[in-house]
Image (cartoon, one colour):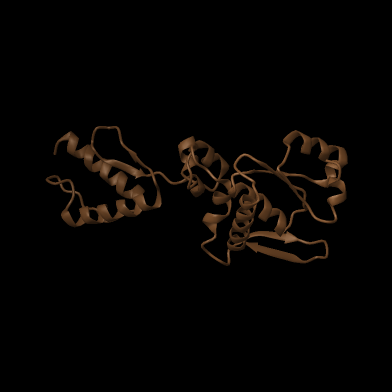
Length: 219
C-alpha cells in the first residue's frame, strides 16, 4: 500500500466520521467498496442539504471536507465568533447586498406557518396579545399598498408616532415594504424632540392616533 493510498484512506475515515457516515469499509485496491461509496454519496448529499457551503481540502487528495454549518448552528458566542465571516452572515438571509428588504427578512419569510407568533404585546391591563408572522405579513402588505396608492414612494420618510402595538408594527414594516423609510417617534422625546426629528427627516406622512395627535400639532 503506497503512502498516498494510506493518506487517502486516513482522510476518508476523517471525512466519514465528521459527516456522520458510518460503515465505510476501505480497501487498498479501490479506496472503498461500492456499497460503502453509496453510503458516502448519500451522507454527502444529506450534509450538503444542511449547509449551503462545503469546505474543500487543499491537501491535493481530491477529497471534499465536511459541510460547514451555518452560524445559527453554534450554541455559544465564542464558537459563532470564531467561525464568523461576512459570507457566512449573508447565508442567513434570502436577499443579497444589492437587494435586501428588511420586512421580508424579518416577517414574510417566516409567515409560512400561520400559527407562528412574531410579537407578544403586553398591555397595561395585564392582557397579552399575540401577533403572528402571517397576520403581520398580511396587514403590513395592505398598508404598503395603501401608502403607494397615496403617493408614498421609495425613499420617502414615514414617521410613526404610536406606542408598541399591532398598528405600530404594521406601519413600520408596511413602510419598508413600500420602499419608504420608517421613522419611529416616541412621545417621551417631548414636543421639542419630536419637532426636531420631524423637521430633520421631513416625512411624507406622520402616522399617529387621537391620543397623541396634539403633540404632533405644529410639527
